Amino acid sequence: MGRNHKSRIWLIASLVSIIVVMASTIVIPPLLHSDRFALFTQHTTHAEQESRPSSLPAHVFAPYLEITTPHASLNLEALAEKTQSPYFTLGFLMDGGNCHAVWGTTGIAATTGFLRQEIEALRKGPVPGDVILAFGGGSDTELAQHCSESELEAQYQSVIDTYHAIAIDLDIEGDALLAHNDSIEERNHALAALQRNPRNKGVAISYTLPVGPYGLDDPTVPDEETFTQVKRLLTDARDQHLHLATVNFMTMDYGDYPLHRDMGQDAVRAATSVHALLQTLFFSETDPEAAQHAWAMLGITPMIGRNDVGDQIFTLDDARTLLAFGQEHHLARLSMWSLTRDRACANQAEFKHNKEIPDSQASTVCSDSVSPPWQQPSPYAFLMCFRAFTRV
Image (cartoon, rainbow, N blue to C red; front, side, top):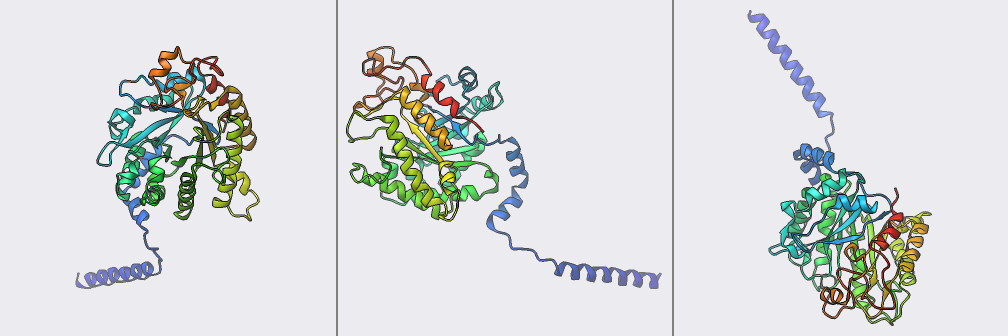
């Protein structure tokens, strides 16, 4: 018994020595912050990736739907089936106070899952589609103006998790763009951190930004500070290593430019100009496919029908011009402001009672003002034109 006991002890000690020697030869790389996070969230990350739908088509038409009332009927599944156009941009998510994302003027917190059932039904419907969740908009309640960087990242993450989002968009304009603070850098930093998080694999991040009819470098531009800030935002996004799936430009409301504009050609001219900027900013000059890649990250969004300013009117002929241009150059996205407006006004009273803003020449619920020089011929006429753009 004693000898056998000593033999067993010797054998165990020898095995331990062998294991220690073997372990010492294994090189274990240091864990990055994101790697440590992944270890603790491996099960959650897998589950969320399982539930997250596939990505948007490479070339997608996704018109805006403005969420303004908690009682609005929004049957996305039925709308997709009726129009055969199943992708939408839902806006806007903004700060409801104390850095909490809410749906527009409804005041409903995003974390309640408002509209989640409608989105899930769209994904599983007879004409399956999905949504881009849009933050910001022309409002002074954009989240980055009211949140710290860590709070901002947390709000974006909560929205992505709540809706199993495949795409989020940041519409930055007006006060949010011109604010003399660090919000541009803080927003980009928060988005870059969000993108590095393994649980957000596959989530597309895009910006929607203002532009002039000659792009961002017109020497006669009346909005020089705005366009300088747009270039600052995009340059910082590049420097933060933020991968933007799309940069979407709003070819609309050209302010103090001369009236009687050709809105279709203006959109084409603006797109051509900003394409050159995207190519210079984001792609190497030695890349033979740089021009192609830059077109593939560009989006254009007109305001259909009568714009807010003067007699700037985007007609169906303009829509056909933009569609042909987008298809020829293989743009990433076409959209429009907005699907709610894609019909003729019933009468002058309806137009006047639903102004975009008090001094606006445009309505929130229809595309014309029941007067010459242009009227929309039928409901969803713009959608029916642009829907041909969506393709894998």
